[in-house]
Amino acid sequence: MTRRVVVSVVAVAAVLAFSDLMRAQLGFRRQPGAVYDVDFPGATSGPAPRRSLSGIWEFAKGGAEGIQADGAKAMPSDGKPEHELPFTSAGRDAFIANRPTFGFTAVPSAVTNDPMPGCDPQGFPRIVLHNAHTEQILQTPTQVVILYQFNKKWRVIWTDGRALPTDPEQPGWAIKDAPPPEPRWWGYSVGRWVDDRTFVAESNGFDDRPWLDNAGRPHSGAMRVVETYRRVDADHLEKTITIDDPTFYTRPWVALDKLPYRLQSPSLEIPEQECVPSETAKYNKLFGNPAGGVDDTGR
Image 1 (cartoon, rainbow, N blue to C red):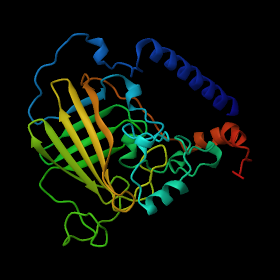
Image 2: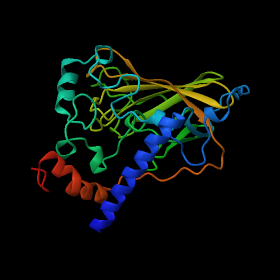
Image 3: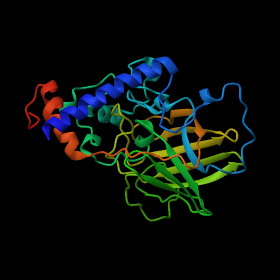
Image 4: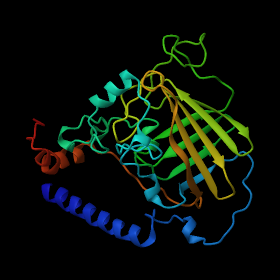
């Protein structure tokens, strides 16, 4: 079993090295079977279909576009003044208490308190603001459903006219006469078409345990997330995500800014990508804990 883990890690390292070489040569990382803008030099797309997000979507410039290891793509945790988030005092305390393995506050993996390596749910929006992958969007008369590659998760955005639930004890929530919502890893989401090409979703009711991103940015139970999907043309979709959390941030801020996706063949098969606790434990025993100077118990 140990040999199997070692071989797997070596294989992963080889794949990553090859991926780095491929990115250096081609400028992006491919998903097997997917197509990208670079495959259609000089081509123009037809008009966008009316009020449609349906399809399998991959990053227009390659899989590396979805990697946000150092935090949300529009606001990475790199220590630069222009990327300093507008923390409240409570938000800054929560950020300092988190010990991520990426970003300018990174610690060794052996001493992280990131809930995700233990396979706690990533939740939303971290599933998009961490290491996003291929997505499939389905539309029904009452829902927009997003299927995510990582851990084979999904979200439902209701489009039947319902309002978001509201907790009277929390600031910034939608309706004051609704019953308090039960906190969810993925929140509650409703959406509407602003025009024939623009779909806006709003979400609240989040469990506050997941992080916002890989760099340990926190959120409270009062967080509200706004997603804007812009169908640019027949082949392209842009996604923007804005975080509004009055408990931890003094103002809303943009975490993802018009990230471009390209429509894929309906026959593209999305591969599995699972979080496996047993594999995480083996990795920590063999590599993470020794690298962090701790024993197998994490001390």
